[in-house]
Image (cartoon, rainbow, N blue to C red; front, side, top):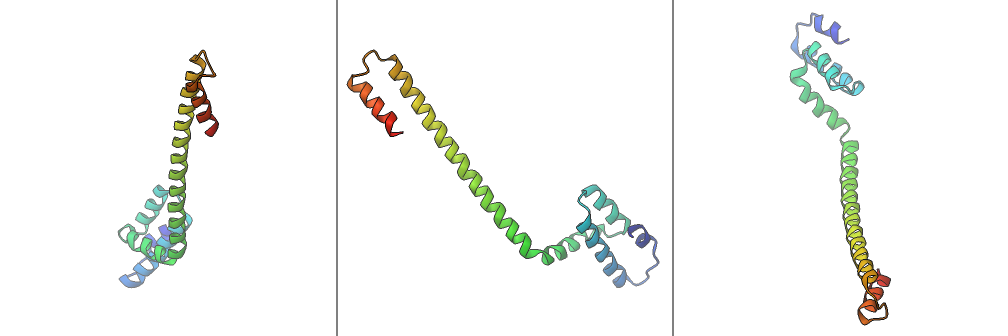
Length: 124
């Protein structure tokens, strides 16, 4: 269709543009490969109105896009939350390892210092 449109003799610019926009929208909807999209848009001489087509498509699917964008923001926030919790867990793990090492170096596990370390380990 793109190649046929390229060689079609349409003298009136308004219908030509309208048909080009429709073809462009179809191209954007049905092709995922950016290289192929660019090639087809060039074939129909509509590369210059590619932005207009994207705006039209955005308006058509604005609700869905907004929902997806909100979900992406929520996912990013969750990911940051998980990363922070992982860092906290790593820090606590290092603290525990240090305390265990101190305990293993102590000769008297009944000492005040050893009991304090054991109590802090129980709390973790």
